[in-house]
Image (cartoon, rainbow, N blue to C red; front, side, top):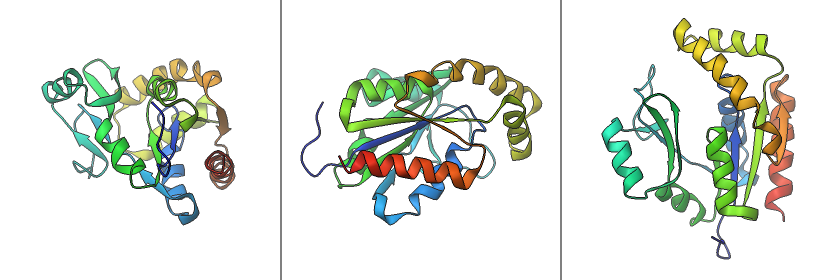
Length: 194
């Protein structure tokens, strides 16, 4: 599926939970020269803390989520944890790129690779690598949004996610937030200038 002239490009960030990708995306969106629009993902999980439907995520019941899958409304989706699905609605991709903005996406590793496969040269994948497992665990605990059990699951999942990093177009280690933001920003600028 090729883009029409004037359509924005797709930038996909992926990382284990706690690697800082959401923080990096929030910083990047502040840069008007990147012309970024953020894709709101859909999920079948419950909202955390102050999260709102249509802002952080589109929150669906498991049944609603699967109905959207069956109707072909997702460009990618994945059951990330048993009974917990995440996906990107095609309507979100079109909403951003057809307005001429570049779409920045925060998706799981398999979703990122599926988007790259589907959109080819119109998409770039960037893996945000935590400096080490201990730092990742500390970041998850310091967020204060997850139970000990959830943190344990996220750390187990991180091993799996890290195994996909070599399939991404770029890897950025987030050991210093300002430096990581700068590296991702430069990667995006190079990609959108092509």
